[in-house]
Amino acid sequence: MKNISIIVAVARNHAIGKDNKLLWHLSEDLKRFKKLTTGHYIVMGKKTYYSLPNRPLPNRTHLVLTDVPGELIDNCTMAYSVTDALEKMHPEEENFIIGGASIYKQFLRHANKLYITWVHEDFEADTFFPHINDEEWDVVSKEDFLNPDENNPYPYSYIIYERKK
Image (tube, rainbow, N blue to C red):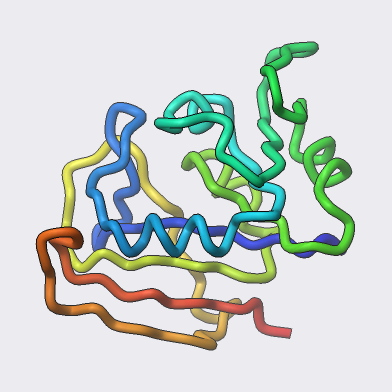
């Protein structure tokens, strides 16, 4: 079985995006994302890839899912189905699912770890993260950052979940 983790920032109302953009800017969360994913495969849908401000992201292998047969994106490994993506992921190292919503939904059942930044606000959105079944996941780590500052304007928590055995 592949080592698959989901990494995502989610609002209290499960919002994750609007108009193919993030809903907030939390400087510390972006630094954490870079630290965790550098050196690893990052798996995403095509719209997420094109939403990246600087692409491809340095020092990561980009695995992009598309439903257009034969489509190619420079400097990316392409996958044409979930099964194809699973086969192309790194066999031992941690693979990070980075979005969007339909990719999260399709890979949630394959993931063994979730890195969720819970942003303690509600946001207007058109894209949402699926609900997590508490009976399937254990919280293994939690860090709260409840005092907003100029670079992190919302209170948030980092929670790491592992799939129950």
